[in-house]
Length: 240
Image (cartoon, rainbow, N blue to C red):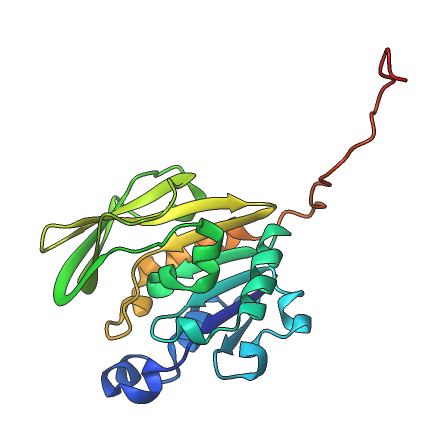
């Protein structure tokens, strides 16, 4: 399975706190725990040519993981359209944290994807709402993060196909933090935790969820349905 971890890779170059937490970048931190015998895991970043997603890479990708924050507008519409079409044709997509505001996620959702937020070093508890789902396999009743950025409702997204995690924050807010969607032949998982100044992606339970999600969103090998005017399969009585 070909997995590509995409990251803006901007905060790590300008913010010493982020650089200390993720010295090789968030993308490399995620790629490092996903690598195994059954996965070919590579990375791509915003400032690479074609954002690291030229056709020969994108069209070979089974699962794309997306982390973005401060430079959503710098992602070219051409690349967004290609990623969008790849999802419709079966590529799995995992959108992390502030990727909720990425062009491609908003295009797939058809809404503003806006929310409330606050950075105050507060505790987050992610409650598992569906213990039977493959993405929550190996996770207890909840995941507790000592410090995280708060995201609060209302989260302007379509109703998820499945809601897997609900977050509670020390300041009192709650948030739909693990949402699945199906678009065309593709599957999408949005997972909330991952503010750049906190070591969230070093947490074993967060790593487990993302690893599980890679297996869940991976493509099913089948052709995309044919749309448009269709010839009858049977003889239609009375047809002239």
